[in-house]
Amino acid sequence: MNQGRVLDAERHYRDLVGQTHVINYEYDDWLRRLGEIYRTLGRSREAAFVYLYLHYFDVARSQLAGDSHVALRARLSEMEKKWTEAAVLYEQAKLPVHAAVAYERAKQLPEAINAWKALIHHPGLLHRPYEAALVHFNYGLAAARHDANSGEARRALVEAQRRLEQVADDFEQVGELERAFDCFQILLKLGKEGVQFENLAEGYVNCIRVLRDDNLKFYVLQYFEDFIKLALERGELHAAATLYQEAAAFASRAALPYDRHYQHKSALTWTKCADKFVIDGVPVQMVENALLAAASQHSAVGDYPAVRECFEKLAGLELPERAKKRFATIAQRYRGLAAPPVELPGLPDYLKQQHAYGEIWHADLLEWEMDGDPLAVAASIVGDLKYPNGIRRRALVVLLTLADAEARKVALEVETLVNVAELLGELQSYAALSPIEKLFASSDPRIRHAAVRALRFLYFKRSFVIVRRALADPDAKVREAAVVAIGGLHFPHAFNPLARIYRESTDGLVRAAALQSIGKIERVEAGEFLVMVLRQETGALREAAHAALATMDIADVVPILRQHHEIETDPSVRETLGELLRRH
Image (cartoon, rainbow, N blue to C red):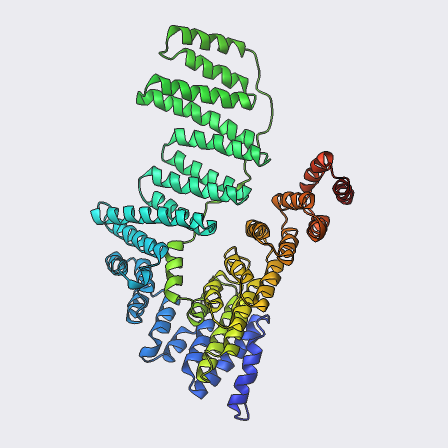
């Protein structure tokens, strides 16, 4: 650089900024020098990318004159939280979803309403039912916030609910439970914003069902806790008491030590419900049913004085004389019995955090509008401090790589796209999945191969959508990359997709790779699954299950091994189970 060899200096500084692990002051110093080099070379957009990372917003803006950089100027304004300015620029850039979101954040509801309304008939949404439902939802929500009594808002929200329910059903039909879950979370938002408890209930019930089917035990209880809290806040005591009972039943089935806690809470809530029924003047049979439910739950936890109190209340109701005498007699049977001094542990406080539901109604539409453009995705990350510096740096490398390829007119060549796929994987961010999915749609098997290889860094359930398609790819190398990806994708939420791949595949290598990954998931369900495979399969698959179980370090798997060892009739399998028990 000191010798005036600017092009050579640019190449070396580019190599340096690819070392994204170094300490901040050193890395930032390299970037300041690289920014000066790009300015010297007249490569203003690359300079702006560098200054966006550094948060030198005014300097970055000075590099982005002209109509071709409107979208990037909008991104700069967004990073500075100049929402109105960002919205206007996004409109100029023909990015209406980004504009609508920016207007909402600027609290300019009339402009936001108009922007969402204009999107309802967007031609790109004609065959995108999920995104179309989100547009109706955002339009209705903005309109309702502007005027709670707006008939137009109510119609939009009713239409959004109808569409979301249909789309969720469609996702479940094809096995995409995580996408269905997104729909149900949006219905939750609809219930929280509105006054209809039914919407809230539907959202929670379906979220709990999907999580239960996915064997995510603690998430199920967290959603029960959140649902119960909201039911109590809205005075829905009957619903809350029933939910406590359902939580208790689930905890018992899942072998979690919280069932008695929920039974006790259910009993107390049924009692409050009965008292409220009396005040409200509802039919006496409903009061009777609530008190009987309370007595049943108190009895389940051994709180006999409370049981007696329930039956005494029942004996005092305006019931037929025969029923009153029977309840009084039952109450006498519990006289003198004490409540046992037992602890009833509830869900730990650290799991009772208020859910911060992501704004997927915005995020998924923004993703749709970016249409898998790696430059747009990386630009949305590079200046955003909610991402760790390492990810922002890798996003900057993506931007500079793409800009360099465009300058050399090789942006669409196979070598460039293969390199971009690798760089996107290294982002280790959910945002990278959309451009990787687009690259996987390429007709060139080398690009599809690179896209699948990139998944080994992306620990998200959505990664398995590409993996499953890649397993059926006509190119052998793409299929091999999918098997490698299966071997690397082991994280708690991966259990169900891996188990599904195991069940659906007829390829021994694929099934063995799935078992290997399942064995690295520290969950009881993974252990149960491997024991099942060990007992039912033969040959290489049994050996793979045995190897995976031998390395598992979960104390809860030992009782499962012992139980199956006791009932196993095949001598060789019984011997293998015994050997595993001795290891643990």
